[in-house]
Length: 334
Image (cartoon, rainbow, N blue to C red):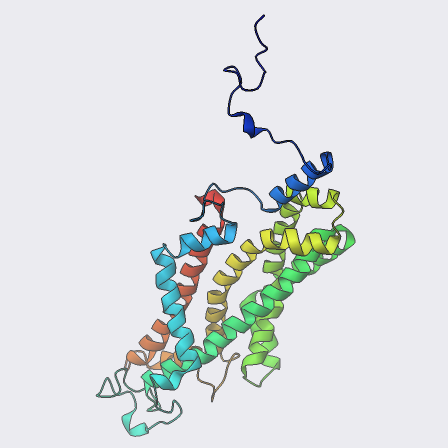
């Protein structure tokens, strides 16, 4: 009699016989469910492996792509240099940015002073280097505050839903209706200190709704995935599901938006300082220098060129960095 086609080890059976592995340990269906849940916890397989042959995670895969992306490498080097001069400006500009000599007002490039002098006789090179500290401090602190506040509120709203989600959405709509420049003129005209922290507080106040919506949508999408449902079926609590399963898979869009927003916040600080409601002297800032040089652009264009160029380069570097991170973290763009 002909043997059945399904008999193991015969020519009619596709694949090697060791592909089917029976559950051991007497667990039965529970062992299979546990193994499936652990597999689903890793998220979708992106089809890439490391040197050991194991599938790479989303973050290791993104890091592998970023270090081979020339746009990311270039923008990261520029940002590292800007952070370095913001922390240690005396290393490349040992002069005093507040030391001015009216006898040298609006003079051009000279030996030891490559950027010339502004209308007050201050060294433009020294002020441009020292101005990086205030601008980058405002951008980094405002981005960190807006990202933290928006991620927490948006993540909780997306996870729990209900009345909390509705309340947060209506509050975010109110803040979305306030223009940034107009809100800054009203808010910062009341706070006349001209220090860094009122500007940071204002940007956080109007910047968190955007990140909150990104975080909410990302959490709503992540909590419907199979690995979250499997973890919930195995009895995982809400806190564990949120921190262990949803957060690592929902944080990527927030990082991308925050990175791009950092450059925008630096430009916003310069705009507010240019309008006279942001940072004020004796604080050294690119926005303050641009505002002072705007009235002398015909007689001394170099006083406007260098701080405006530094501002543009910084904003461009952060935007390019955000675009590179977005491309690396979004599998749909591959």
